[in-house]
Length: 164
Image 1 (tube, rainbow, N blue to C red):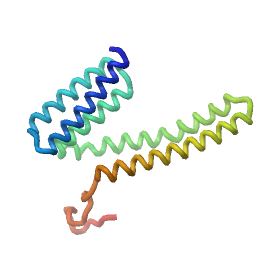
Image 2: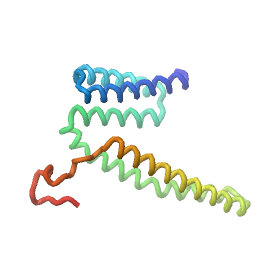
Image 3: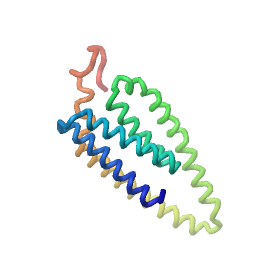
């Protein structure tokens, strides 16, 4: 499949997936919305299988996780172990990857003056992009109100548990 067409199709699938989740919260037929999401997930899985890109697999897994959590929350709560293992693996690989990238980048340049300029540009880029990402995250959380009311003392199952 052509790359542009594939990207357009994937974008449309993601938009329709989100639309079906929204329509379900607005009182539309839950069975119809669930069936639509499962069909979209199947089509996206087929496209991912054909394209064989890592980004496609990550997005497919993310949407599959969303669907499992939405349809079967009791089963999804038992899958926390898998998410913790994944996050630990990510944390384990990030520091060595960044260090190796920096060492190879510096070792590949013979002109130290150029390395200094590149370092300053990298720091400025890092600061600007990190600040922008923080503002985007803050706006998304304030807009979606995700997690509101989850850890209130009245929602805790046991009186001996405390909220930190």
